[in-house]
Image (cartoon, rainbow, N blue to C red):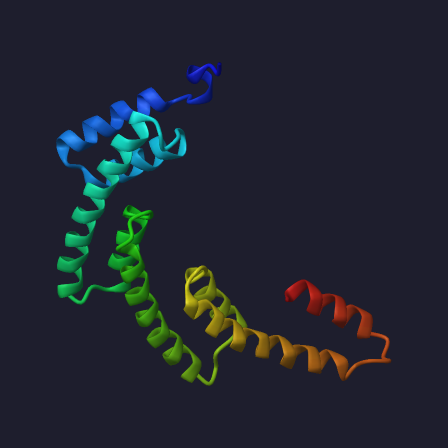
Length: 172
């Protein structure tokens, strides 16, 4: 027989924190501890079932909060805060889609800039890793890399070619 105290370290504390958060209706904290309890136990255990029910309750509250938020036409910062607050709730996908749409608009404006640099694009990409807009930005970033590689390849056969190629590899 397994020693549940070792196998499920922190489970008791997680359930206690979950109960306290439920009592206060602190939905972000409920999500955090429900996720912790569910990841540290098994579906057949009462603690898991309790955490799953609490997570469902918190998810409903999060969905209501998202509806109110979307009525205000929120800035992307608010959407990302919501996503970070409720990472495992199903409604965050809708918030991610809305944030991505705003990022696509931002990317389009960025790409219209004739003086756009790879560094500016890289910063944008760093902000949007994990979102579909990242792939769109990556296409332009790859084009920057190809342009730089073509410049380096023009020096093939010269004495500085190795250094230029090494610098290219380091930069990209």
